[in-house]
Image 1 (cartoon, rainbow, N blue to C red):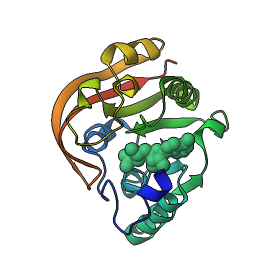
Image 2: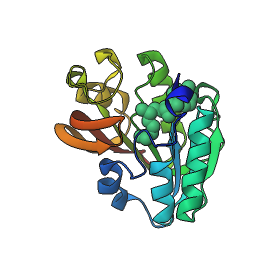
Image 3: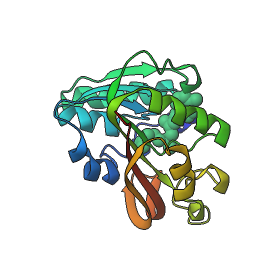
Length: 198
Ligand SMILES: C[S@@+](CC[C@H](N)C(=O)[O-])C[C@H]1O[C@@H](n2cnc3c(N)ncnc32)[C@H](O)[C@@H]1O
């Protein structure tokens, strides 16, 4: 399904990074080692690499990874792209300064919970998680995201899942997004930045 969505020449969510990432990236240490989860066609990983970070990106759709590699080449940066199913990913293989998950609400809650648990384990002590997605009221806006309110984030849900982390930023708000034909218009958004203790 995802692979078919990425079959065209255009970039479904554009080639510019998510506004959330641009706003929050100043929190990353210089030359951070970052893991991007469900990276898609490369817009976020490639931008982070242009900012001097060392980026590993994992994505399950071959067409998306191919286009992400093309985008990295076009921007003259290196990203360590992996074509993999996130349910098979070895979260303990490396310890990252930051892990990002931008619009990764593609799965029902049990899979999302496994993802969040893995992302937390992949962080070094003191490392940051940057998570950005839709709130339940997004369903009905028609501007992107899965049509399932129970896959969306609420502040309470994230507070619960990151109870063992320091919450640096947690916002639920409406904003305008312009991210390719996949995400355009008024959107109900949730931002989380949280730090692994230690
Ligand atoms: C809404 S897109 C977001 C892409 C990207 N993070 C962005 O913001 O441009 C969700 C992504 O999750 C990927 N995905 C879905 N299920 C996956 C899985 N089991 N393993 C790896 N990637 C998966 C899709 O291929 C798609 O690229």
